[in-house]
Amino acid sequence: EEPTNFYSAYYGTQPLESSCKLYEDRPGKPGYICSKNENVVFNVTFGRHPRLIVSYLQSYDHKIDDALLEFDGTGYQKLLMGSHSEKVSQTKSVFFFAAETGFPHIIQSGLKVKPFSSHKMTVRPKNNGKIKIISVVSC
Image: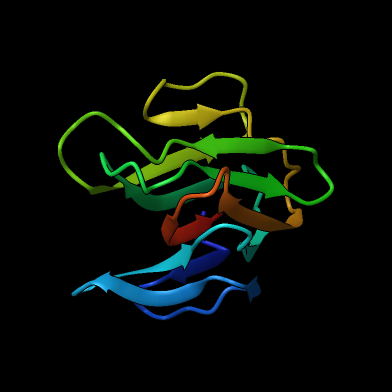
C-alpha cells in the first residue's frame, strides 16, 4: 500500500497542530521538538492493513524523555523509549501494524485502529524532558 500520510522534519511538513517547534537542534538534524507540557498532533489515515512508522531521537542523554503516542477515540497508547545505554544519539524507527504478533524490538504489533480509519495521533513527552520526532508515515 502507498503511504496515506507523510510528515518529515527534513521536508518541513507541518503537523495538524503543535505547541512544539520544528527546528534543527544540531546542524542538519531537524525535528519536531517538544518539551514539558508541549505536544504535536499528526493526522494519520490508514488503509486496508493499518501500518505506522514513527522515527524519533533515542539517546544516552538523560534530558531526552520517553514519548507517549495516543490515538483519539481508541484508548490506545504506546511508549517510545527515549533513552538507551549506548553512548550514541541516533534515529530510531518503530514500525506498528494491526496484528496480534510481531518481532520484538523491530515491529510493534497490536496497533488498535480499524482499516480505512483516520485519527489524530498526539505525541508528547511522558515526563518533563525533551522529545524529538523526525518523521511519521501511515499506510
